[in-house]
Length: 392
Image (cartoon, rainbow, N blue to C red; front, side):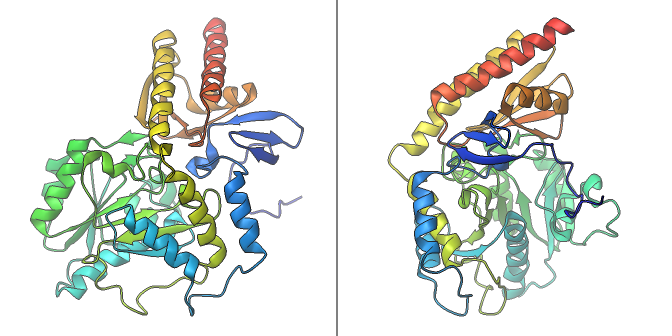
């Protein structure tokens, strides 16, 4: 019998009926420690009381009215995001892909608005992932994702991630912007160094380009600061965010400085659902928690604990684990064995993780993970590696 759901996912035969904090409970009753967090989406874990209360309270009042009218909840969330970032304005959408499309449009509109309509090309980086729309796939230029979908969308020039010399050589008279993930997620938890990110800012200032950050996976507290680029002490001109922004509710946004957004006037962009009362109420509830005194400092502390324990495992099991990558609670284990097989064995042991490129397993616990749960997860990895090593 044909599955009514289009078979675009290689789904694991596992379904969940409820979650609580860092745990998921399968339909067969088994409990799993969730260090996948919906691929860095469930920033506050599952069924966080404050978020549940905000969602249910708003759901009893008003869900959607369209952007024909003022939406106080969206205005409040935008004002709070701006107050805690470089940005002066925010556009709300429903996903990371839409947010990336938004910053691309913004960059081209910026140069058109400033008398340079020829400046439309955007420089991107090898190993990038910006979403599944045609334009986002074209920006990342991964042949695996583009096969069968015809010619790519024009306007992108790709260079090696981390290579400022190659970047400079790619800049021409039609270059409008640079689009980059401060930490590549799907690409294998590859973190751009602070010097690289500062170099990008300097290049953009030198050539009059916009610096566009994709913080869909690495933003919203995952590295221990609200946004990952803060560690480098620089700011972008515009930035795409999503995933953790809604804590599991479909919510994305792109944020921009006043100068960068000057061309985004009435009618230049829109969204049917983006910024509706229900979604932005949830976003405000997530931000309530992220901005609590000491919350991000606790993420840094917990991340250090997790990283040290994972690095100890790479020393003990070098035939299985090669290195630890990433920052904060966005970590990757570079594997010496097939990462899909390690993820499968960890799932059998009760730990959920996420494979990525370069034979990496992503470790993405919710930001509310407890020390005891970190120890539990590391223990499951340790036992899995020990059994694997013994059987080798």
